[in-house]
Length: 433
Image 1 (cartoon, one colour):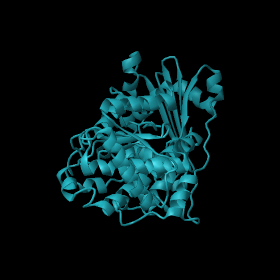
Image 2 (tube, one colour):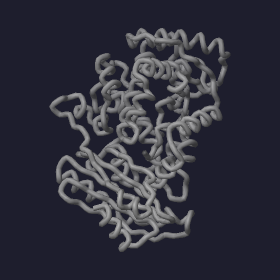
Image 3 (cartoon, rainbow, N blue to C red):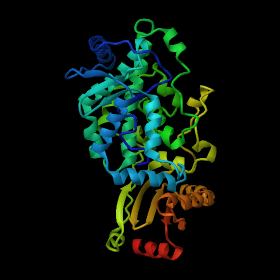
Image 4 (spheres, rainbow, N blue to C red):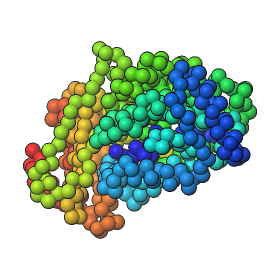
């Protein structure tokens, strides 16, 4: 997964452009949290099974939390693989560190975070007043959903399928975003003033212009398209429209039988409409012979439509987000023609000495869909090869690379060997057959 689940905002609500000065005692925060919890219960029609612990945290506290959660949910090999795969797809500068960049970005954006393991949440110390209450409504929605549906339990079930995990993140964050919107509409004027909303509308967007899309777009997608999905709409603006409420039965279904792919989140009819339901096709890559020949399998995962849309995006769409025009937030495209029609995929990353081998195997709904993906990746060929030549340089000083992109019927395969020759790639290709 290119953005690790611990750094996807399952447990964090982005700052939403709001920033104020801290002024809560622990007792005041607990009293406020209890009051908003009752309000969330009324909006949702569900009750908390047990109280939710709440505290105040600073940025250092958030970083400690994120690192601890990563330690519990991932390995060093997986983080290393995420970094290399993002660079192999030309989504991230080979000279930079993906995890460090992700942490810096989230540190500037986070307003609060809920931890499913401890069933507690923290409000960032830079938030106060009515705006802090908005964050509390969001985080308490996470707490309620966790008590009802066991968020981490479902994520554990989906381990090994990062695309399905991202789709589930969209349900979690979509629920939080939608309920937060309903709460804001219901209590605007009582709990939060319009002045507070307007005075801070342009803050909290630091870093978006400079961050690559692989950092910010998955984060925004799970919020915006998650809420839209739960409202059975493809319109991004519906994700923020509190007038459109989520049907309770739909919410229960989405949590208990979540969408199996980001494709279904991006195209809600492919989940909600039984006649249009589009389940991922199984894709397997047998690496037994490579492992037997001394290769070490670092990771095997699924990308899905959301990440492949990044891989096939135009160069200008893979950079930062210009937030000087607020409409840009509502006009973000989370997919494109080359990624639509996704049927399933699997990728592997293996290492042997200084060499790295990557295979991405995809299947598509039709041969036309496969051709569109192939043509776009082929257009990016020279750009990708230039990126590949720089990936190993800082570690080994080697820049040799061999790659092969092929299409056959409804399947497209991309093979990349870093630190090796075309002949060696052909031998690996034969072993995989």
